[in-house]
Image 1 (cartoon, rainbow, N blue to C red):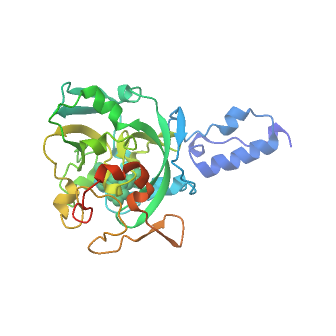
Image 2: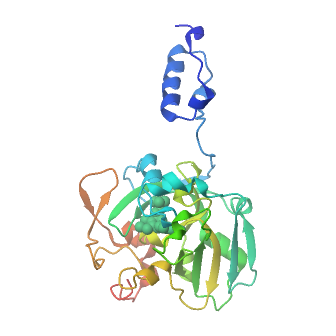
Image 3: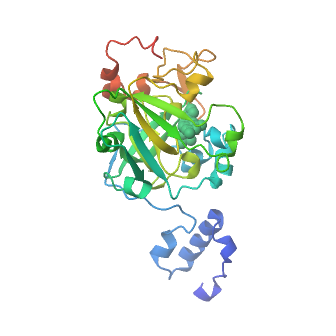
Length: 309
Ligand SMILES: Nc1nc2c(c(=O)[nH]1)N[C@H]1C(S)=C(S)[C@@H](COP(=O)(O)O)O[C@H]1N2
Ligand SMILES: [Mo]
């Protein structure tokens, strides 16, 4: 086969991965095209370089990127799992800022491009356990939230951290429905927020976050139920008192402030003893603190975690 037999690919076709894969196979077969052209996917999101990778002993297979990006909870774009991947295109992720304010010596507004350079980006392969009893294993990209909080210098009276997601009905059509009190708000105790596992996250699978996963910046808290990990954050407030999260307002008996993954404390409407790994059939047992007990249990020494659920 010679190069002259390669059919022209219309520009309208090159965004389709299937077409690209076919073309790539075809070109490989034909030979003679540079490796760079064959490996650079034209539809891909922006790459995000990282300096190290860690998985904390986790050897489970990664959840396919397709599931990570098409099975989402992001109620700002609807409550169906597939709705965020279909609808989150309306979110504008540039320009974007995060304001850090409240009980800090240096309140500041950080631009997203400044944030991306504040500390080295690391890859962290974490389990994510949803309160709905399913889980995924995701290679996230980010750095500890502590790096950002230290810039703002929390005062001695700062005891809690509140995360506030974007509030904009034009960009987030799901906010027309009162399923939660908008904007989405979550919170942590300051020592939880300063823990090295608490990741300020900008990407996954080697690329900037897709909108449906909380672009351009979100939290990932691997030892807590997924709802604690607020997406598309615009404000971080340091507080003296424990904030009330959107989920606590929606169902105080179902969604506690701590929300540590705990197989011994059932959700009032279902068991938390097991979970279904997305892409797998059989259920697996849920681990205390989602498998991160060694790293985080000292944060809760002496606390009754059935009471503080
Ligand atoms: N702003 C906002 N953040 C959010 C949510 C949401 O609806 N809105 N859903 C939470 C829930 S319930 C889960 S399980 C995770 C899902 O993250 P993922 O779609 O990247 O897997 O995001 C959390 N963060
Ligand atoms: Mo969740």
